[in-house]
Every structure is written in C-alpha cells, then in structure tokens.
Length: 500
Ligand SMILES: [Zn+2]
Image 1 (cartoon, rainbow, N blue to C red):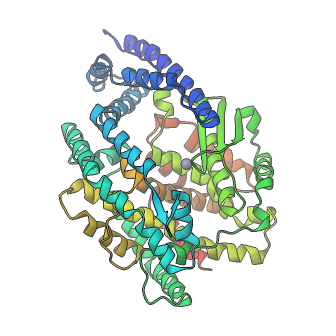
Image 2 (image 1 turned 120 degrees about the vertical axis):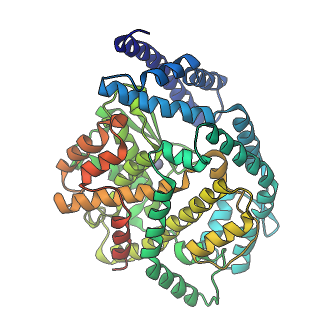
Image 3 (image 1 turned 45 degrees about the horizontal axis):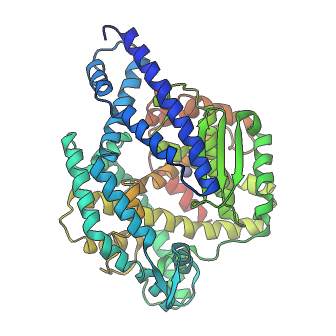
C-alpha cells in the first residue's frame, strides 16, 4: 500500500463486507429471539466477522499507518479500529470462548431450590425483593452458594487467562485493559464510585436503619438489603402495560420524533431481558420488549427509545465509527430513561402530586440498591483482576459490607455472577451511565428549562452527542455538551434531592 488514498479504499471495501455481515447477523438474531431457535448461519456469520477483524494483514496495516496518516478523520478511524482489533483478540480468544461457554452452561443448567422447590432465577430475585419472611429470603440468598463453589475454579482460570492476554498487550491486568478500551482509567473509575458512595452515605445509612427498624430487624443481613430498599413494585394504574405505547407515541409526537420515518419499530415478545434494542440497519431499528405493568417498564421503554434514537441520529456511515463505547451508549439510553423522572412528564401521564411524592420515595430506595450493588460488584472485580490469589470470599464480604452496608458474611457467592463470565468489567457502566444522564439533564434544566416540553433540546442533543458517533471521543462530547468533564456531582445531587 503506497498512499493514504489506497488505504482509504482498502478500508472502504473491508468495511462494506463487515457491514453486510453485521446486517445479516442482526436480522438472524432478531429471528432467534422471535422463533426461539438458533439459525446455524448465525454461527457462520459470527465466524466470518471474527475473521474480518482478526486478519493479520489488516492489523499490520493499521499499526503501520496509524502514526503516519495526515487526514484527521482517517486517523480517528484507525485509532478506533486498532482498539476494536485488540478487544476482539482478547475477547474472542479460542480458550476464552471455551471457558465462557463452559461456565455459561453451568449457570444455565443450575437448579435453584427454595423451600424444597425447584425455581428459576427470576423467582429467586423476586423473593429477595418482595418476600416478607426473612428465613425464606435467607434460603433464596443461599441457593446460589453451590453454584459459586462449582464455578470458582474455572472462573479463576478464566481470570488468569484474561490477565495474561491483557499483559501481552502491555496492560497490568484485564480490568485495566477493558476500562482503557472504553477511554477510562481504573483509578478514576474507583474514585468516581467511592465519591458517589461517600457523599450519599448519610442518607443511605438513614434509609437502611429506618427500614430495618420498621421491620423489627436488629441487623441488616445480605438477604435483607434489597427487601428493605427495593420492595413493593409500584402497580399504579397510571403505568399500565396497555397505555405504554400510547405514552411513548405521545412523548415522541410532542418532541418532533417520527418513529416510523426513522425506521424504529417496537416488537413485544418473550425475551430473556427487560428490553433490547437491535440496530439492524440505519433505517431499521427494532425495540424488543416484554412489558409488565408498572413504573419500571415505562422507564425501560424510554431507555430503549434512547438506544434507538442514538442509532438513528448517528450520522456515521463507517461501521467502525458508528460503534461507540458501551458506557456511552448506556448513558445515551439513560438520558431518555430519565424522562421518567421529570415531574412535568409524569403529570402529563396522569400522576397527581400525591402519587408523585410516593413515587419519589420508592425511587430513592430502589435506585440506591441498584447503584450500590453494581458499585460493590465493580470494585470487587477490579480487585479480583489485580490480585486473583487473595481470599475472594473475604473480598466479596468486605465489598458488600462497605458499599451495601450489610453484615460481613463470607458465604461463597462471588463466582455465581453471569456478568463476570460473559460481560466482564461491565458493572460500572450502569453507574457511569447515570452520571452521564444526570449531568446532561442538569445542564438541560439550567440552559433550556428541562427536556420534556422543549423540542429544541433534541436538536441540541443530536448535534452534540448523537450525530458524531465515535468520530469524537465520548468524554470530549460530554464536556462539550455540558460545559464540564464528566463527574459524579449531578447524580449525587439528584439523589440527595429525591429525599424531598
Ligand atoms: Zn441499555
């Protein structure tokens, strides 16, 4: 390859094939959810996608040209591509995939037992959240112990393997590498998470203590915490399943969003997630959902609306530059999920001031639990990769004691965590997504008056955050859109304000 022009052309041809493969994969994945069976072609396409990414000719070319090119856009593309190749090398390493598959099948095949009955994981979660009988909650909490013990050894093997692959690439450990590929540093993330924890701690401890007192508990055990903070899913008639799509349409109409024109469609079906957004082509974006009654699902549908608009308004043609860091994508989704926190919008949905107050109160506890459980898992995971030889049962006990405020308990549980297997170093993304959503909403409130009811806000967000895709670093976009670098500050004040 003699010139930048030739390089551009080479990449164009390569990207075109990548795009075709990914479009076909999207179509077949949708079919997989709908028809509940795996098309063998999907496996072939995934193989082809990896061949395209892990092609040594391409890798050599990216390495060679990265320091040489003068075209800024091309340089950015090579930077992003170089990270994508590195990530694929580690994540799709043959032995990694084998271990992930083995661990995954242990999780899927595991028998959870409560009160002598075989139950699914959804039931276990529901018990921890809503069951008033403490002994039953304890049993439900303990049912994952054997799974953790079964998985421990293999999961540690996976941790060591990931670490050694990360070290081959010049990183101290796998957590550092994963965060770096999202443009984050481990120390910075830890600082953020601890900042959020410490500055909201008085309120958190009050909530926990008063909850325990109300229930007559003399201590908060690990099987009590979610029940105390996150019980009683609201089933207010305002948030009924059959009015969900009407609400979505109403909001979109008011803000000049034509879902049909953008190629965004909503499909209700039985999927293993709350909601899912599949971006098949630029003008074919499908939201999949399995809605229930209640506030939570309204939040989910607006979250998925965020994913779909992020995709629809992303003006990059290049599949390399269309794809953004997971943490930023979640942040853009939450930015729309936060619409369900806006008093003005809730009023339009028919919530009266009494209902609004009750909602705020119940939100505080469940939000705290959501953020702190994720924080505890994330901090545990960084320490796990930094030193896999330590006593991990003690580490998890300590992490949950410090962050969740529960009694110290060394019962084995750390390894029974599907994210540690299939979505490593992902837990912090949920928390940071809320930093992003809070900071952007805070800015919108100050500069425009809010989000709901101000259609011009959407053009602002499009221009600053959604349109550029990965052609601009995501943290630079946040700073540009909100006037300051990302921090935990706005989320901290949003939480403290909920206290009312
Ligand atoms: Zn999401």
